[in-house]
Length: 489
Image (cartoon, rainbow, N blue to C red):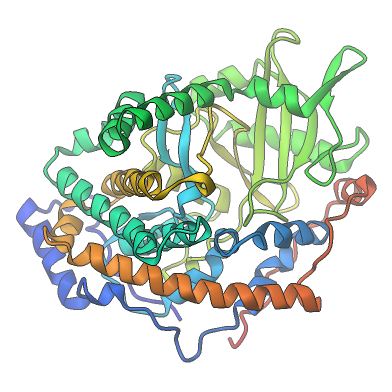
């Protein structure tokens, strides 16, 4: 099912603030704020296990057990790896028609700290594999449900779990109202920097929270490329190279075709960068290549790591080259405006983030696979919510809600969305109800997932430890197969 969405005004068409507010009011007629809280599975809802099997058709088979192991830790971990299921659920229902650039996978673990190009740590959305234009509430709903699931995993009471979802929505609404009153340039330049984070922590969790936030910022500042390099590499015959840590990290053999293909693709990647960044990278030589497993939902996609050396062995840089496929949202919104999925990811990230990685770019490989490129680690850090009590989880929910509103205000119409949300708590309460109901659905799907792994329908056991099984892929790479047809299509 593809849902027709209202679009933002065409480029060059100017609307007054009053006209933009009218769009928000009209959206309430389409889908009321109370309706946003309603959730029930569609009568023809696809089997969630079938959706996962379809998605995994193009992934590295030997890594699928690891993907399922990580998803099997808890209902929340399962949720992290199943954006495809929620996309289907959201796409099957009505929407506001108020479009923004969506993250597409806006759960709470996809927010965190990272370095802006000026080396200041900022807090923002930090995962864009599924980014695509779509109705703003889809990101909000995914965020709110993630907090309910995390709260339940932490043993919080039902009202506390629902309260975290309501807080995320409340802060999203209040922040969007704030952005609706700002100039477009002020919205564009706004970001959540260390001073903002410390003030937020002090206001929501007191002096102890402010102290903890300072420690988190200091920790992020230590997570540079060099920390990654020291952990993932070793010196062999006076030269740095990646270590073999299968299945999480496997060095690409010197005689692998994949190594040559990746090197040959670099000029195409450089062409997507601004001239100054390109000139900088041209001073570096690729000295080693590996494959590193990342995330939960991304496990099984190709994710190369490049080790580059500048003037000497103390001048090293690590880049990640991560495979990009079509967004899980695309069947329910519209075909991406970008032919290459790596460009889709990069352009969506640039639209939503207050500041993006200096080396963010994209490339299409010689065999047809598409990738985006970024630094492997640059002050990137996200908190572990498993140890959060109700107060801290509630504060984090508000922070994520604010960051998401800022991203949507950059890439959408803050006035129209703020008008739709209104000053009452109707939307907040609706998101609390949705988050709780959808978390119940995730729990049901999680049981079905566990049964599928136990029965062998989904690959279980341990991920392949044999280094040669991964090196075989690198020595004899082939163009990825076309995705299997959608069940029931």
